[in-house]
Image 1: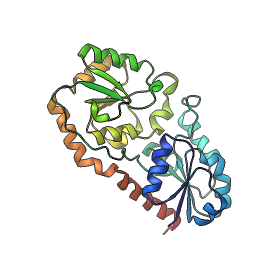
Image 2: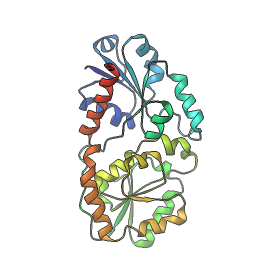
Image 3: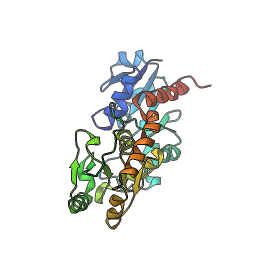
Length: 278
């Protein structure tokens, strides 16, 4: 089956479009030409490609899948309710368009299929260190808001380092993921993928974060908190070496299901079901 994956930009498209596309031997295009569409048996529109290439995909007469990933404007639409978010998708979809959700909650709300994010290629669980020395966050630092200072202060009080976007997540002993202010909202908690939870598992590190559908889908190790007064207890809960070592053991047992190869195989099965329905 010849798959054409269409998207734009970097970030999540690099992961969901380029990496998965290449793993499936798909043709990945930012600006597909007519010969690309003619070549394909199936077209996948990733993220906001629905705006630019949705009409052409629909006219092609070929099966089209929309991977409904990060399709709202941030931070302007971070406060959308579930009903408003679903309406946003329905306004862009058409009858017969197959949908893929980044979380189980999203997939259920839009009537689509769930596909998890895969872990960063090359990331594998590393042994726990005897003592905690560093906490890390990977992502847009603006999302942290006040959490950045709260975490930095808590780390300083313990003699730990707080690392922002380290080159290797395994340089840290604990990982954190938070949103604050205009960067937080229902749609962020329920429709954002579990990529940070997946990468925490792949690194073999506990993740301290707010509750969210992506995290629940992955069911990784760590602590779920919602207010800064819970931060100290969450950090201290992972000081013991034995607790962190057990995280590594569980990660080794489970991380294979979130590898690039495993998620690509799951994606291809999903695409084949759309292209050749029973």
